[in-house]
Amino acid sequence: MLAFIFPGQGSQYAGMGKELCDNFAAARQVFAEANEALGFDLARLCFEGPEDELKLTANTQPAILTTSIAALQVVRTETGLQPDFAAGHSLGEYSALVCSGALAFADAVRTVRQRGTFMQEAVPVGTGAMAAMLGIEREELESICSEAAQGEVVAPANFNSPGQIVIAGHAGAVARAIEIAKGRGFRKTMPLPVSAPFHCALMQPAAERLQAVLAGVQTGEMSLPVVSNVEARPNRDAGRVRELLVSQVCAPVRWEESVQTMAKLGVVRYIEIGPGKVLSGLVKRIVKDADIANIELPAGLDGLC
Image 1 (tube, one colour):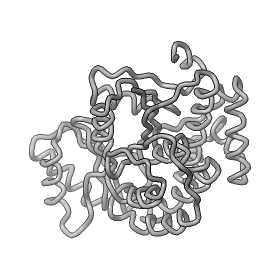
Image 2: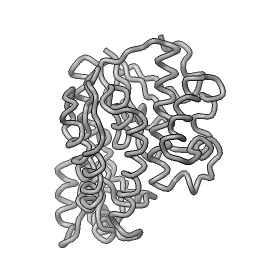
Image 3: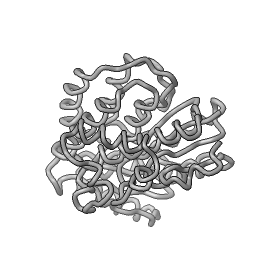
Image 4: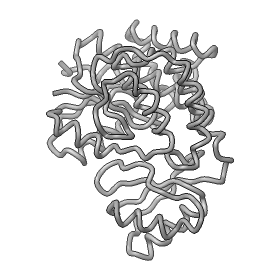
């Protein structure tokens, strides 16, 4: 079985999507649709930057989604490959839902533009933080977060792969968690250069604003199941898409469990579609013998079929 997987925030870079657009009409059409839906030249931002503007959350999210869907359309037109499942990491779940037919691309790109704005505005800059905590088991890390909270928010935000969990919350609480972890002998901790503490309770204002936006978005019949971040289980009920996307804003991304679920259901091949190779690396750590490919440049199409 085959799964298409889609990257989230952090995979962006100036120049992404340009080679696809230079070589394939299907990719150019996607970027043209994004420009029209958003009312500004997203294609130029993706192709040329500047990096500082591309890194703004409200720009990053539609940029990665658009590049991913452009790559998806190229894969579809050039190879005819049909996945059995789709999944995406955080923002990438929107790309997976477009792949499944649950969301129209224009609706998705407008929604994630607003999602990025809401997430950035939910917490004043400098108030929140995130950190990668390496080599710590889930139960131990939850204990560390509980001790570090001291009336503030800090909790696991991304369960990425064995031994790689990201925490998020108030900056002071995240700093305390890092110190507690070091005191318990866990030295591999790394504050992340992010603009907001994603996937924790501090994002509740963003979730509420996103819920209002999604209420006006139509969902279509799903042609394949999407493994959701919130439940780490396949969903093929279009009527549940909105609630899962709203819950996703504050809930941890259960990526490790999502990949394990797909593996148990028979997936042996994973194609990461979009910028970067972050998910390919994570999948390799979760399922050692997985067959993994990445499509972000035309050269990646060679041997895909």
